[in-house]
Length: 208
Image 1: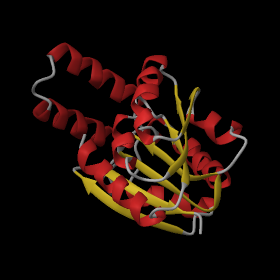
Image 2 (image 1 turned 60 degrees about the vertical axis):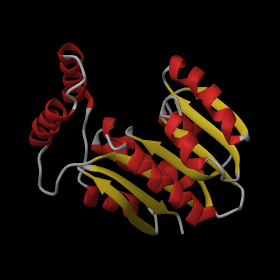
Image 3 (image 1 turned 180 degrees about the vertical axis):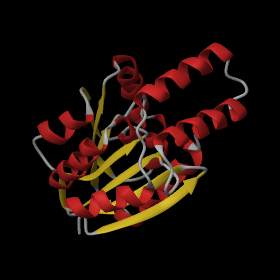
Image 4 (image 1 turned 30 degrees about the horizontal axis):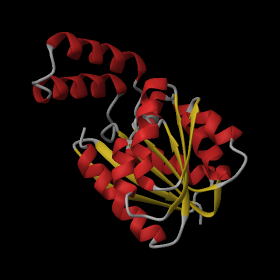
């Protein structure tokens, strides 16, 4: 899913945004945090708070995030809990391959709540899959699962079928232009494509 390429964009964006200045990070759906830890290594992260629903992933994240040499807080909760329950604002909200699990109305709510959770000069950085312009969800499901079947050749057939079932039941991607529109409607002043690789995109949304 082009993690290496996309997270390289994340690392460059963090350098461009913050340089040597300290900044706080909220990671929504952090998983094991393996890729974001690598992307932020060497940056001046003052605080990292991660949210995920997997205790196993959070246990791995706790070990991996030691490399950031900062205050680390991990919460067993969903992404909306992070946006609603955190007592302070953060400089950077990050989420990868999580937003597409939300229906459209909840994505719009996500952008509005993310804006409130950011500091005055805060940014939202997302990685996710997208529909091609004008593509239906049904067509995307067939295309994406077809790509997986052709490309993920080392995955056992049973595991691949399980992945297809999860995707068809839980994935609701949007077109990139739709996400830009949702962000602007929520109040983000700038939206930017950081990069895309075969339907896997990275975006940066700025509060100011």
